Image 1 (tube, rainbow, N blue to C red):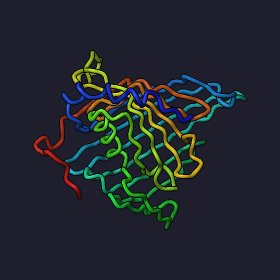
Image 2 (image 1 turned 30 degrees about the horizontal axis):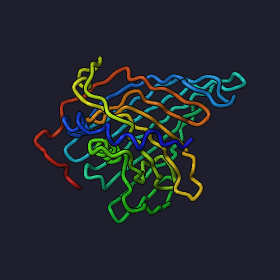
Image 3 (image 1 turned 60 degrees about the vertical axis):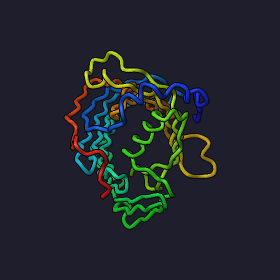
Image 4 (image 1 turned 180 degrees about the vertical axis):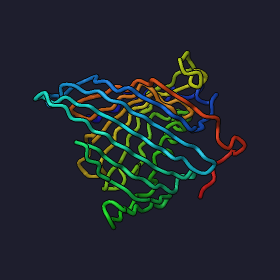
Length: 268
């Protein structure tokens, strides 16, 4: 599935408008309606769902809660319903993360991953509570989720065609993933049913997520979205391999900026 789209051309598209609106990740409550847009093979014949994404911003941290509900129709006509709840706390300095991932299927809920992590230029460490006692080293330059989003937007602002930082988000037990982010171009502020987005430029990105192995030529997961300079995304595409979902932003609330007098985040 790995494809580097227009990477050589994006550098000439991502400067002027983004520079007019500085990157400032904000709190948000966003709801996406998920619909099947592509099927590969015959294992899945239908899919629909809902994604709720909430970011609470304080002066020193972001608390993120994500809930995704998927209803999948299988080849034999049976239906499977899966609910994923993913919660994180991330320091604004990008050095500390706590995380928990829960999956509910068939009425049973299981904690898949839980723990805390630290990172920095020289690398870091993950200490898992689930699996109990597991410790994983993180490579130098590993980013946590909100810091990763911020680096994507800063790269677009600088006119870069791509970035490829390692990412740890707490959704697996094997530590950091490799990411390849193709920055596909910018769009000036345009009419939107969401007033907070109508005044902001945006950039289209394509992100592949890979395990850090020698044979990671194909991503384990791939997503595409249009990011605004406040960190809100729309036109989301979720590629699970055997099927692809499109996420339509159907509801959005952006609260007032936290700590508007702060020019730089604390680094606790």
